[in-house]
Each structure stands twice: as C-alpha cells, then as structure tokens.
Length: 439
Image (cartoon, rainbow, N blue to C red; front, side):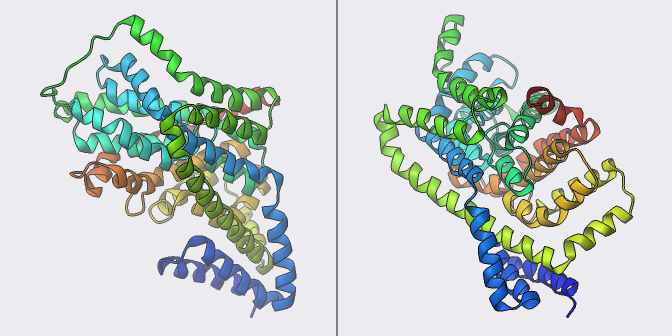
C-alpha cells in the first residue's frame, strides 16, 4: 500500500480509537508504532522510533513542565488562592459586580504561580464561589464565570499549555511565555466587562444578600492586606522578570519558584499536611503529559514517514492562502476540536501536521501561537468535553449541575471569541511584548 494511504488510514484509526474511549497517548503510540512498522518493517521501526522517543523525552527543556505543574499545586497547598481572593475582594467589593471581578482578577493573579487552567478553575470554585453565592450571585453566573476564568491561567506565565506548544514547535520558550501576558490581561478585562454587562442587562443575576454581615472596609485594611500577596509578586518577578532580563532561563525560573513556594508550604501546618498530595498529583500529571509527548512524537514521526505532512504542506501552499485566512481557518478548526478533545491532546494531534505549514508560510510564530492557544482555551468551557466545567463540577456545591455551569459559561465564551477575533485582527497584541522585551 502507498505510504500516504497508510498515513491517511492511520489518522482515521486514531480517531476511531479515541471514539472508543482509549487514552489519547496510548492511541497515538499504537497508531504510530503500527503505522511505522507497516512502512519500514518491525525491526527498523523499533530501532528508529525508540531512539527518537528516547532523545525527545530526555531533552533538558522538558524539565520546565514538572516544575511549573509543581509550583501550581504547591500554591494551592499553601493557601495562596484564599489570600489572593481575600485581598482583591477587599479592593473590589464595593464596585458593581465587584466580587465577580475579584474572582476573575484572582484567577489572573493565581495564574502567575499556576500554569493550569483546570487547577485554577477548581481551586477558585472552592475558594470564591461560596462567597459569591453568599452575596447573592446566582449559581449559573458564579460557576460559569469561574470555569471560564480558569482559562486565564493558561495564558499568563507560567502556562503549561504554552510550554507544551514550545516543546512541539521548538520556538523560544521565553518569547512564547512573554507573548501570553497581553492576551491574558485582555481576557481578564473582557471577563470583567462581561460581568458588569450581565448585571446591567439582567439585574436578577445578583440578588441582595439575605443575611450577610458586611465588615467595615477601610483604606488602611486594603493597603495592609497587599502584604499577603508577596508570594505572587515574588514568583511573577522570578518567572516574568527573570526570563525577560535573561537572568533566568525558563527552567531555572521554574526551579527557583518551586523552592520559594515550597518554603511557604513548609511554614504552615496546613501546608505540610497537603504537601504529600501535591507531590503525588504533580508526579501523576507530569507522567501523563510525558506519556502524551511520547505518543505525539511517535505519531508525528509516522506521519512524516508516510508522506502525509509533506503532501499537506504542498497542498496548503498551493491554495495560496494569505496568512490571515490560514490563521482564521485554523482558529475555527481548533474551536470545533475543542468540543471533543482536551487542550493538550489537540496540540499533540495537530502540531505534527500543521506546524510545518506555518513555518513554510513564514507566519509570525508568536501571533500564531497565541491565536491557537486562545482558540484551544475556548474549548475548556464548551460541551460536551469542557474540562474546566467538569473540574468545577467536581468541587461545586451539591445543587449545581453540569447544565448550570455550561449555560452560565456562554457569556464568557462569547467574550473569549471576541478577544480571539481581536487577536487575529491585530497581531501586534501578540507580538509587541516578546519582540520588545526579548530581542
């Protein structure tokens, strides 16, 4: 059989295996190994693929993944999310929709120490959601907001998804991380505006609380509370400032951040009790991502051997698409895939096929990366997969259903799509900061 047809049927087989419920990493390993063996034979495949997998997984820059994962889990164990929400609620409570805006801003602040949108959403579903409901926010608005706001954690450094993108694309990890800052801040602004508009259009979404004692909030209390955020300032300075200045590599910034948050965890009894769980979760998540990376490597090599990638490259270039049209098309594809796959799986499946086309067309890598990640993040709150929604449901109060969270998240999904359109229309929003800070 022609290798290109083997590649085509391999892609079909992958989606059939995924439809049966097989784990994405195992499906890619199986398809990659069998497909490569069909082209090269069994012995050359074992020699070729095992060598490729070994050298791809043993790369130094991969160490940043478990570091950033561990920082986020340690931050949760240290109770930083509670401090962040407390401080921001003091400053924003008197504003219309203030507690909702405080939740969004808290997710953005927590994103500077946690690179996972799922962890961020789950943490604040436990931290801020009960307080919002106590002050009269309806459950759909509360949990829909938090499931969406968790996505900010995947844009603001340290972002696990951006790190994964950098590993797959071989682009500068530092530039990619810096490129996520402006879109992350814009997403925070868009969500805050959405909350205010929702309350203005539908005042019933926030009812006056029945019996809630509102403590006296003075400027002295507000200003003194800022001291509680010093770990956030420190980690942001290490990761963003260190990478920008060239003083730290992303790997070194991750290690130093882990050491700092570890010290904070060990300084409290509650943190020490949560440490074993954080260690176990970090190892489990890192192992899953490494396994996924092995699967993506094997599947990608199989596609190259089959000739699918060169053929796709030749075909797309033959269409004479402009950079704008190509990026729009890919954004739409990722929005559709987001209904069925999680974010890292989308990258793992598509990058071996698509990124060579991006390079051949000479599309700005920072612009394309941010647009793709933004489009992928939209899938975190869309049915039926919507990982953030399921993560929030797992820790939500008993009267909250999946339907409530999906419905409550739609206004914020619209805000995300509007930002995606803005980022596509104005590439400078994605490229200005990394080009300015990391020449």
